[in-house]
Each structure stands twice: as structure tokens, then as C-alpha cells.
Length: 251
Image 1 (cartoon, rainbow, N blue to C red):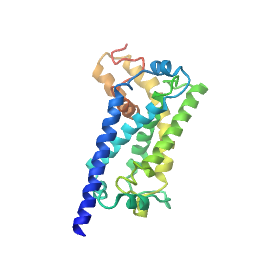
Image 2 (cartoon, rainbow, N blue to C red):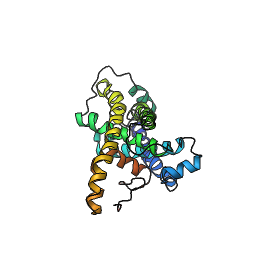
Image 3 (tube, one colour):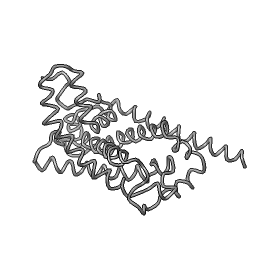
Image 4 (cartoon, rainbow, N blue to C red):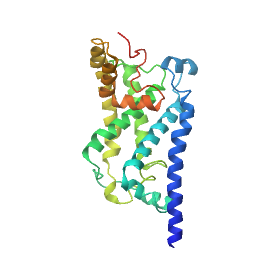
């Protein structure tokens, strides 16, 4: 029995390692083709539709990075890699019966909106014609509504899907480790953060960049005030400080 349990543990850990390598590596091959500007994407799609496959691939890279960080830095996640995968996964998927899930407040109310907003920006990167700047125009708000929908799907997968906290780490196996907070705060907070980052970038970061030619200072401003956009840029194979039509040396 002990040898059998050890074999299951080895298979479980091998599966996790294969997931991290495949999801992080395979999309990286596609990334050589993804770093395209919004006008280029519009030209390839005829300006008619969102590149859903591209958004899916970049979201998969974001997901791989998040799970790799969990496995690397969370002992509780590594511990739950042992045991029968499918049985533990099925037992981990449950309807929450409480609001909180046992995570620290900054994880639920800061971390989750940031990673949700990153998924939303990934969608916007692949939607031809999505306004890059905040406006009162209906096109801006409808594009952000679609990004919100993508974020909600991404969040649901992150919590319950086949490549989720439930399957990788068995979050939910104990009832006190799952709550409604992530299902509500992630998409709603992400929408608020996308709008906030858009406003900061247009009315503060751009204004501050006009006052200096120091590239390090400009990079710092972009990374500090747009963390979700930074993650989306990295997932799309671009420089983390990338802005469409605004190279870091612009004046």
C-alpha cells in the first residue's frame, strides 16, 4: 500500500510539472506571432471580430504563470499534489456556503482583482478597435463590458475548471477553503480596476511622462500605476511597459 501511494504521488507531481512546462512553453511558441498591435490584428481579422483563440492562448499563459507561482511558493499547494487526482478534484468542486475563503484580505481584495483585470486586458488586446483610452463613448464601455465577461469566465475556470485551484492544490476539499468572495470580487473588482488603470494612464501617467525624458522613470510610472496591464503585456509577449502608439521614448 505504501509503494502504491508513493507511485500515485510521483504521478501526481509529474502531472503538475508537465502542466507547468506545457502551458508555459507551448503558448510561448505562439507568442512569437502574438505581439501584434491592435491595428495589425484588425487587419488580419478584417476588423470584424475578436481573436478569441489569441485571447485564449494568452490567458492560458497568464494561468500557467499563476499556478507556477502557487506551486513554487505555497507549501500547502505542493502538499495537495499528492493523492488521487480525479477523485480529489471532484471532491474539491463544491458550492460555497460562506463569503470568505480563508485567504488574507489583500489576496481576495487586491490580488484577485489584479489578476482578473489582467485577463480583461488580454481580451481587449485581441479585440480590434477596442478604445485604448478611457472616454464617455459607448464603444469604450461596451468593450469593457466584454472584457468583464471574459474576466468572469477566466475567474470561474481559475476556481473550478480543469486547470484551477480545485484541481491543482485541491482548494475546496475542505469546505472552509472556498467562499463566494472570489466569484464576486474578481470580476467586479477587475472591471473597476480596468477603468481605474485606464483613467490613471490617461490623466496621470501620460501627464507625468510629458514632464520627463528619463526612460527609467517612465517605465516605473507605467508599471506602478498599471499592474494588471503589465501582466497582460507579459502574457502577450510584449514589454511589460508597452503602450500602443506610445514608445517609452515618446515626448
